[in-house]
Length: 428
Image (tube, rainbow, N blue to C red):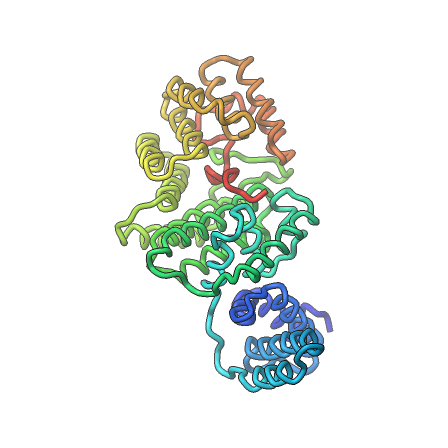
């Protein structure tokens, strides 16, 4: 029987996807040793793959995995402690074996998200750490997404886990006064992961890094529904991700939003995103991610209807710059100025950012479009060439160097197809 057709294999794979973070949080909450818990959980998943196809799927797969993993974790502790205190270690192991829950296990993943974004953990590694310990992604895959070597990423993740253990980072939900800042760090890490996935420019694949970030955004919204910015982040990712199937043509070429076939967009994702945005707005606490989601919603609406929404878009960018000023938002606002027929204002806005944007690809791409609209063909080609040189994707480079780009009618973010801040704040 093929593995894919065997319900035991399917159940083990599903458990690895949906329960990994829940089980890891439970296994490591007392010892704070994430690395040891990961090893124990890997042992349990390996046993599930070996046994479930023949023995059948247990009635409570999560509890089965937790039991086996905790036994493996106990064995590891016992072996480590034998030389010094064999009897106490074995007694502890027996106690752990006896204390095995039979009902559904509690969901501790929110605590694990807080652990990953604790101030003791360097900001640049928080998103990769979250992807590994909550979703179980391997270091090599995370390294490829964040454009670093697998060895460097693996070492950084090992150091972060050791820091959690040695610093005694608590596996708890922080007190109310600390939660807003910590939730903001979680959202930033998830968005950085989505930005890395967006840069992959892959075809519509639910298993790619952008899909994993979407999973985390849904998880955060479900676990902490009272913070409207969580729903705003979810809406933002959904509204961007809905356009993924139309971002490439049949030959793999990049398709700017104004030329995308909207019939290829995921309507269910758009509907889910709009619902999340409405739910966030109903709480009456506007913030960065809600504003960015509202901008993406207007972009989609403009594309569906053909209406000129330049004025409300500029208004949203003004509010975004008030709430969360950033280079990405300022560059996107300049693109909106161009679309509204205010190319001179767009160029002035870009010039004001010049000292900080020497290596910022969206700045050069937007500048190329603005200069083309203003009729400075030579400067536009030079800026487009700089933008292409800063692009990792060959299809993006070809588009930026084509006459099709510089001759394209003024449009919003023609060369910045993804989240405005996808290149900001990503771990290196």
